[in-house]
Length: 355
Ligand SMILES: Cc1ncc(COP(=O)(O)O)c(C=O)c1O
Image 1 (tube, rainbow, N blue to C red):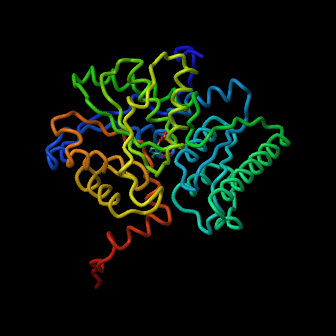
Image 2: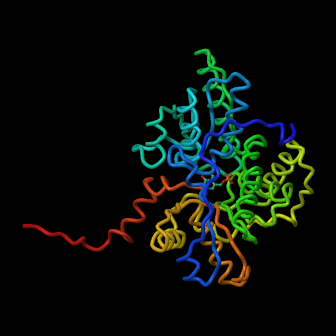
Image 3: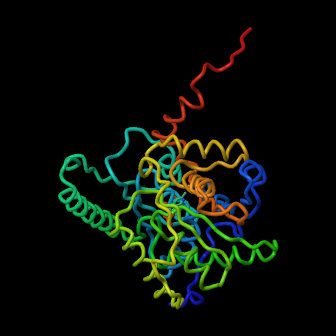
């Protein structure tokens, strides 16, 4: 399906703003801009709405009544799938990794508010098995849960549209192929030549879309992905295959080579979604300087990547750089991250007055 023939339903507000981060730029002696995809609008915004624009259209064309997707309990993508389902009169199911947390926090509260059905995959009984056994059992649990949930909805007469983790199917990635054009057009209007556009690199649809779109539309900037989790070679290979598949599906004719992609793996912090003091330092920095709220799982790492790459001389200070703010702030209010912030932000006795 040619990109130009693929239809979408706009689930967010576009174009999202681009502006310079004057205080951060001054502090570090750099030229840093931000694109506010945290302001896409519904349910506190974020990058996933751009993917859902295309996924929703595909689901409605196929007469589906349920958007069913996957993620960790704090999945931002799940929250925005719930948002789109609520707004467009569909049902939403989210299949989540691990047993159900005792308490709802962060995105889980928002998912419930918007009426999503949440399903948890309790892996406690085989959590301590060897990596191979775990992977095998986890896959079985995933297949079993998916089949049973689909059957449940179908028995109720509702056809299911299955969306992979992060909305990263070739259809979903079209959202960020087109975002590259949006950025190109905005920069032209602003008369700015952008050298690099940084985004978080997770399920890959965002970086992959920007990579393909920047080439397809000759957008004039180089996308850089900052990985948010540790990935081994075979996982990286899968990501590249997905970008190639998207290139073919959308008939873009881009030459996709590994050498040509720029993914940084050194700014993950401790691990995926594990509270990390270095990442938090950058989240606080952006909040203090610019009153822009990054998140501890994705955008904080991306911002860290920018600053540390400049400080180590990997990219030069005189370049024009853009941080794509992909959203994710509800993660701050999740159990682990908000607890980790207590000591740093709430550690000393608060000033109190009394009569
Ligand atoms: C806030 C936020 N930023 C960045 C990403 C990474 O995007 P992608 O999964 O398309 O690589 C995600 C994905 O879950 C996200 O929630």
